[in-house]
Amino acid sequence: MIVKAVVFLLCCSAGLLRGEQVRYDNYRVYEVAIADQTQLEALQYLENFPNGYLFWESPVQTNMKINLVVPPHKYAEFDELANQLALANRLRVPNLQQLIDDESPKRSRRAFGWEEYQTLEDIYAWIDEKVAEFPSIVSVETIGQSYEDRDMKAVKISYKAGNPGIFIESNIHAREWITSATVTWLMNEFLTSTAPEVRELAENYDWYILPVVNPDGLNYTKTTNRLWRKNRYPHNVLCYGVDM
Image (cartoon, rainbow, N blue to C red; front, side, top):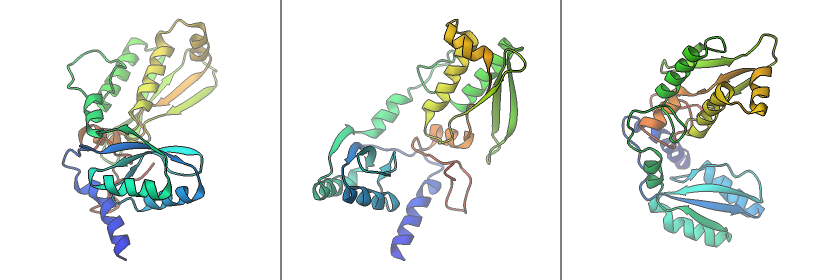
């Protein structure tokens, strides 16, 4: 019963902090290699009852590597665990907060680009610009609203009628900013590239793209907790988020 209560409180802690900026000062990121079944089962247990640890990938099999975030008060415990299990590991990031700060510099207003990660508002504004710039090719439709009433915008790129369609969605997990950056870059390539292989793809398929599946979660990673993964739907008054 005590273990269940601890897990419940840990699950809910992010919801309690939703009005504050969550920081990861001196949190370390280790690359951990899983060599045998004993190591795998130990890490799976730790993922189920993390008590401060954060798993960037789930340990699902042997002969794989995962990234494990270790808070400062767990340094000694992690070292002991690694020694007991003969767990091969490598320090990748000595201070996670520094990495987050470097990733999100103070922004000056400038043209949309792919040298930094964009906000939801920037992504949607850029899409509207493309609709205005290529009105016969690009269209956008709001297909619904999120729990926090943010629009979910879907883009269609079509050069001619009768093309087969391809659907792409991104930013399902809130913290995976690289996904929406990738699809906006891809959209830009379809509209501006002169490379024959790109034109072949762009003009012979209709592209249906949902660049931000999880707008509430993306916004939350920008304003409050960079490592948030889920959406912002509340299970109850304390626990927020569905893992989409």
